Amino acid sequence: MKLFESIKKIKKAVSQKKVERAGRQGENKVDSKLNPILFGKVSHRQVNNVTLVDDNGYSHQIDHVEIRRNGIFCIETKNYKGWIFGYENQEMWTQTLYNGEKHQFRNPVKQNNSHVYHLNKVLGGKYKIFSVIVFAQNNADKIDIPNVINLNELKSYLANFHSGVAYSEFEMDMIQAKIMAANKRLSNDEHVENIKNQQRNLDNNICPRCKSRLVFKEGKYGPFWGCSSYPKCKFIKKIDTN
Image (cartoon, rainbow, N blue to C red; front, side, top):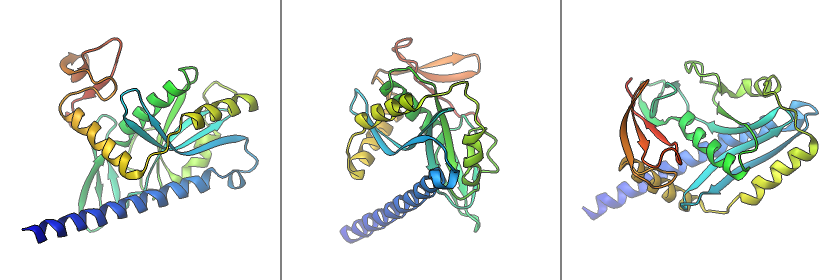
């Protein structure tokens, strides 16, 4: 029995390492695309691998923050192979490999919305932050969500984005400095354990933002779980009806 458990733990550790390695490879691809040499002479500021720790001690790991004259972009990178299926309000999306094997992963739109929320708090709510989900394998064609794009679309997406702002060089410097000052150093193991704790709380209907209870509510667009501290905290957990 102990031998079986040991083998199971080893397989799980190896699988986790493969996921982490694939994630880093995807982030490196996006980092290369954001390189101003490839973009041409684009004035921008970039902060990679940002870890923010909120007032409850939860950590939030952001792959890239791209600061440009036309906006601040919080970029989440996914490096999954195969076909990707999902809707904006689903809790989980599906990866279907070419051999028919299927896996589920957390909805990256919701994941990155949380990152935007915490990044916005760091910047004092002074700026509009735009969420972008980039699939490094260029396999997001089956996802019909405007800010979910393929890696080969990233350059044109950012260049043609109209946000109604035009940041100066000084403003971009100040935004970058604030983000870098808030960036915390955590090991990957610490962050993974932190994420597990957040998920456990969410599964038990505890608000991941303020630790109040989530209560069942009926809304205009259907049922959902809302924070009992509303309107101070406006977190909601939507119920997947698909």
